[in-house]
Image (tube, rainbow, N blue to C red; front, side):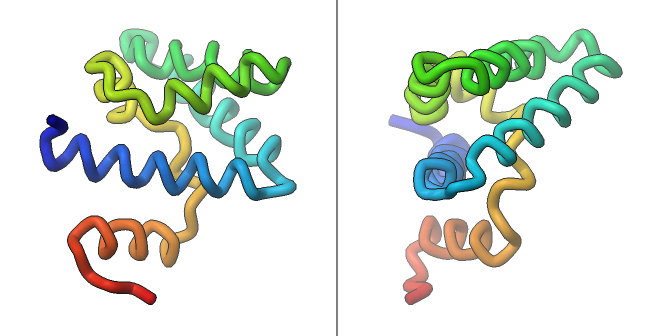
Length: 112
């Protein structure tokens, strides 16, 4: 069973993945995430999770298999992936309104 903070992070990643899956601009979102992760990783080489995100995003932008791997990884319950979500490069995918809706829903508040 996931801890509360990990479940909340997973809920946000579910919303991010859903938006990517239904957006004609998914490549732009992934490229923005890759650019951010690469820039920050160059400044903080000791953040191993950002280095992994860079590789995963590069692969996702290069091939369908890479994209499938990224999507599967984003929703994994494996401890390593839970830890990786703490260094998420996807902050720009959800709008403030979308993020708030996810968090309110997570708290059990009906936002519809």
